[in-house]
Image (cartoon, rainbow, N blue to C red; front, side, top):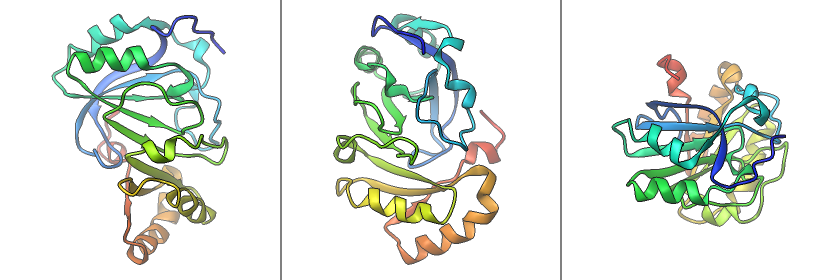
Length: 205
């Protein structure tokens, strides 16, 4: 794993302007910054190339901000990999000072850092999340890969704050199998909503 000696330097796998495809902000124009490095190890991860931080160049917060500022959007989504492997205080402060809204997608497996306008908490079975995320989450998004994931989802939903939105999302390759089960589950448990990877249906990054 690449050692980042300064919190102002971060391994950036890719950064791109697109449409948020998942969760509460689906359909919103957003600039995505995907950080390299992940130790959660989801077997169904669709960006396993992000796991090794050594593969990706380190960029300064200033460089990241300059690139983001070229796009006419308000929302910046920090994702991975697992972005909270790094201290994100300086990055989010710089982005917010430039009047961007900062969103993060995290498994919650590493300590929370950064200042967030929206925190999407997506816990995984492969590495236990830290307790602090349950009170901070704006959105709980659980990936449904098999039937046992419904119980997993409820276990985490029981711990989040009262204002946290609840989403079930089918794992992409098992959508045909899981979607009927998710539909029935949400009809019977309407506190949940369905999240889809709409960007894949639209064939955009």
